[in-house]
Image (cartoon, rainbow over all chains, first blue to last red):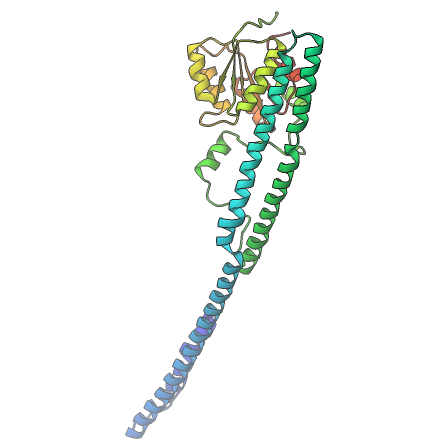
Amino acid sequence: MPAKRVDRALTEPFDRVRAYVDAKSASEASFSDVVSLAEITADSMQAFFASIDRSIYRELRDIADYITRMRDEIAALRAGELKSGKIATAGEHLGAIVTATEQATNTIMECAEAMMNAEGEDEATFKALVNEKVMEIFEACSFQDLTGQRIARVIETLENIEQRVGRFAAAVKTDGDDQAGPETDREKRARELLLHGPQDAKVAIAQDDIDALMRG
Amino acid sequence: MAIDHTMPVLIVDDYKTMLRIIRNLLKQIGFEDVDEAADGSEALGKMRDKRYGLVISDWNMEPMTGIELLREVRADDKLNRTPFIMVTAESKTENVIAAKKAGVNNYIVKPFNAQTLKAKIDAVFGE
């Protein structure tokens, strides 16, 4: 309830009582004056409590409406489905991507190492080995197609989460949503030890620039 | 000064694949005596047991990072002259400056090729 409205609700009912007493203060009060004062006081208090009741009712109704809206928005988040469904599946996709790229890298490196170590062989044997290993490298490179599809699914999940969280944030009208939360131990370590990870090509410093910094 | 290709080299990275890549590149360059460590603390232990002619280290590792390893090495009277090359995906200017301030001899950003690795090793040994 706004402060001005509260002040008015508290003072108005007593104005009539105060006016009546002021008018009677100069003369002696009769029994009928006392009865009249009691009636005026009762009327005023009734109006006062009715006003308070209406204000409280409005406030409670607003709170109830807000809770209902929040319940709907929380339901729209479908947090359970995200946690056990989409996020879990995205995690499985990412795990599979790591495994697939690792397997492919190992296969390619084994082929390269086999070719490096076959230098002493006669030409025909060396050529056959190179052909075989080159084919294995081509086959291993097929991981890119599968990992590409898996990455697309993970991106889809992230976009879905972004939409749901964005809608929820708009519904609860969060202020200062760009403000970072308290720094975790991991974030503190990353900040202190400059652990940024790989940078986007647009912001990454080139080897030539690094060389210039090292010389300078 | 010619590079002594028989000197032991210690490579430090938490990714086995990267260790394997660097080992193969070093082999191509001519280095055969190559040891591996999975993080800074393991590397420090190996350095205290064996004298290495060159350390090639990643930055982002757990529990001890490459920059922490570099600082430990430079603060150790017995190890502080060991040539140290950082090979990392950390490609921000502040990283390069921090590594230089800590006493790194050269800095290579991933991904890199054999030519870059050789050029940086040559530069460290003044060739």
